[in-house]
Structure formats: C-alpha cells, structure tokens
Length: 292
Image 1 (cartoon, rainbow, N blue to C red):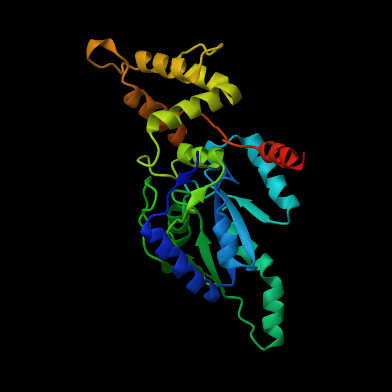
Image 2: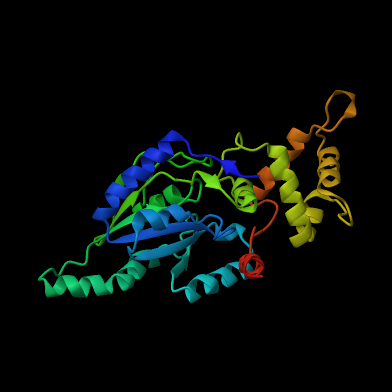
C-alpha cells in the first residue's frame, strides 16, 4: 500500500519555500518526537540544500522518554544538532536562539571579515502538518502570532515573526511529500494525525494502532480500556473496546467507527499514555534487510 496525498496548496508552499530559502541563514526543522524519521520530510533536504540546520523534537510530552533519548543519540551521531522542546510548557524553547547562534558562528566569523558585525539571524521553520510549528512560534513570540489547531494544514501563508533582538523567523505551512513508498511511514503519520483522516479510513488506522500498541505498550492499553490483551487480535480488541465504551448500533452491533475514533483520540491526545511509534532499531533492521 502506498499513500498519495499532496494537496495543491502544498505544491504552492514548496515553490514559495524554495524562493524564501535564499533569504535565511538557518533552517529550523521540527520533528515529532513520537516518530522522528517518519516525520522527517525528505523534500526538505532537496529544498534547503546545505543550509545550516537545527532539529527540534516536538510533542516530547507524549513520547516514550527512553526512546526520545535514543533518537537524540541517533541524530547526534549523524552530526545533526537536536534540541527537545515543549511548546506548551516552554521547556527548551529559550535555548533555540542561542543554539542557532552556536551553529551559525562560522557564518558570523565570515561576515566579520567582510566588516559585518551584526549577529542577527533569519531562520525558516519547516515541518510536516500538525507537528507544532505555530504553537512554537506563538511561544517564542509571546503572542498568538499564528493560527493554531489540531488539524493538518491550518497555517496556510508564510509570515516573518521577530523573536527578541537577534532572531527573525519565517513560519511556513506544513508540507508532506507526494507519495509514501513505505506503508509503515504512511500509517505512522496517519496515527499521529499528520495526514487528514479522510485520506485513510479511521478504522484501518485504529487497527494498525492497536496492533502496534498491544505489542510495544500492552499495559497502557489494558489500563486505559480495562481489557486483557493476551492473544487477542486487533479486530477483537477494537470490538471489546467498542463494547466497553458503549459504541453500539441498533441490534447491538458494535459501531466500529465510533470505537476507532475513541482509540485515535486517546492516542493523539496523549490520554493513552506516552507512546513512541518507531525506534532507531526499526531502521537498522530495514538497513540490514537491504544489505542481505
């Protein structure tokens, strides 16, 4: 299964980002801490080229903390600067400007040789839909500078926002790539809410979620829904959750749509618990398979 999803406004956004990229010193890329590689848009590498980059992990409050640490080590070993943040509480946010300054020090040295002493920085904020760009910028700017929401694609236009004396940010709409060759990537993005629910059936996403969570975080499922997983299939689990939550239609049949909505709502809101949807070892296994 491959998922095709590239609305017209995203194609337009890509063209605009390519044009604006020439005006910035550094790219700030936001990744969902629950799925750092799946939420990393390969188009960003194509668009931004060799621009200096700072990666921010968002939504860390909903991610498995031990796996977040593994992911930070993974990216650090690749030479990528990573900073975990929480836009809701402000944790890590004050470090963004100073970290950008550290990364751009070679640029400042070069400018100084040309007689330019200013350390003012222009940064572009990039990431997939619903990754938390607007929430971050609102936190940085101390006001509702951008429209926020829990639906992919709320930020439609690009706008410059001044943050303090040294940093100026360009917010951009979230963009996804046209096709996900790896079905797991598409499903992980759907689980997180990065893909609109009308692209894939919620029931299908919920079954995939139950399969994953029952294997990696069985206790969280059992505690949330008072179910005993044992050897139950995802279908049986969704059926039982539907019964326990009163998702019934006429005749006593389970309303799977409602049951699926409950599961996905609990996952995406964090009510199900701190869950990370992929680990570095998942990609090591893929690499080993390709080398065999």
